[in-house]
Length: 150
Image (cartoon, rainbow, N blue to C red; front, side):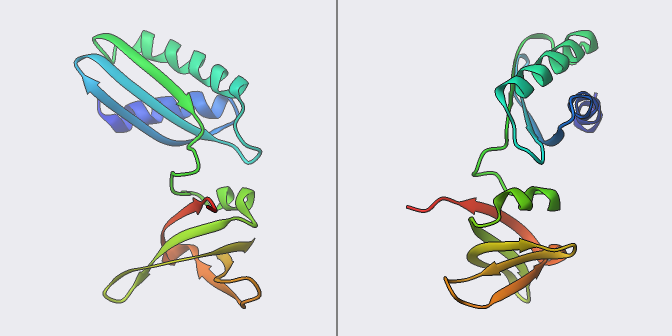
């Protein structure tokens, strides 16, 4: 079975648990696969939600026969170091520092700024405290990652 088919089936389990599938990674060797399922919600991810999703996904995998031998299933939130993929994810991070990469002539331009607002078509960021906000359109963003202050 192709990864896209596995991803679609697992997405169904995740959505039945009122969450979103952010990413799916399958790695390891034949007979000892590692399946990593990253989920998120507008309210955040709890250990109870991870447990619920894990139970449903494990049942699906066991019935499917996708993996020969043993497998390890890990279900978690994407974590702060994973790029934001969907516009709804940004709302949880208003006030935080983002590292962003945008489409620009000649390659991707990198910069950072504080996320001040989320609009229908993009995000508002301020490069420095007190600096004017700038609209960065979603269709211009190639990557956005929450940065932790040091």
